[in-house]
Length: 181
Image (cartoon, rainbow, N blue to C red; front, side, top):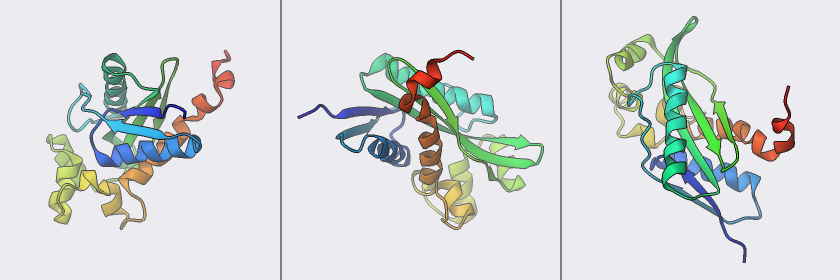
């Protein structure tokens, strides 16, 4: 019997763990996937604002996992928000790494109502803002803002899954990604 493929997610949020498990099951269908979440600090604000802060949060979570645990792959997802020229939006950065390489991916944007974005600028987390606006409880461990604002046609997990699917490309074709431009 072969050893399971060990995936470590830098969060105990079940939405993030399920997204990672789904992607690795898709790409490694003949392997047993052991996907676990651990508390890994992002070292950024609880609600990152801006693409750089959001990406750095995900990178920090993966680095922490690599420094403290042994796994075949390390994964982190960090949700953030930013005021773009066309309006405020929320998005996520994902980082996938093994012991040789790291890939960074990003989700699509979800437009945010200005009033909700302004609450984020005042230091509130998006999940809490959404719970307040929609009278939900702990939506960030369920469908998230994405589920609520799309009437559940998309979810936080589906957005992470798409971003992780794309971020896996360098691991599927390492020879292409190792070539210099």
